[in-house]
Length: 150
View 1 (cartoon, helix red, strand yellow):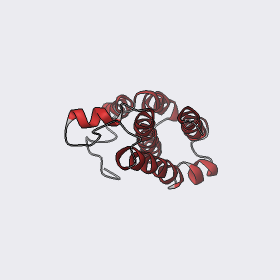
View 2 (cartoon, rainbow, N blue to C red):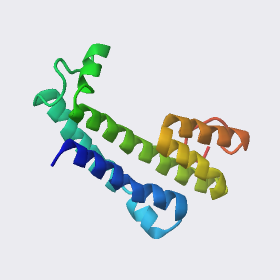
View 3 (spheres, rainbow, N blue to C red):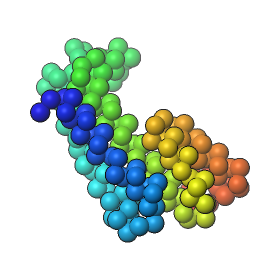
């Protein structure tokens, strides 16, 4: 299987989860698939395989590591390294999007207000999170804290 195929599979794997968060946020299958450990564990294992291959089995760039910008750049200088970085984004963006959806439901937000936040979290990660946190702040439904129920 090529790295390009793995990249496509990773991208396709998260699409159902994002669709469920946006179009069926309260459906039991959304809770079962998206709000369980399924996605973080499966994508996290894919990430782990890739990072191990990059760092310890010569599939990353020469001099790959985490202690300097040059070493981090070396991780991403190979296709496997780019795939690893992309898996990292996918798992964390989806995790954050799922948290936003649960948090918004707990706080009684209209789902229509959440949809742009989810879109931006899916496409631009931290920008969507900032948008959601701004929504919480603007509506006074979060009081500037990330603790559950605050």
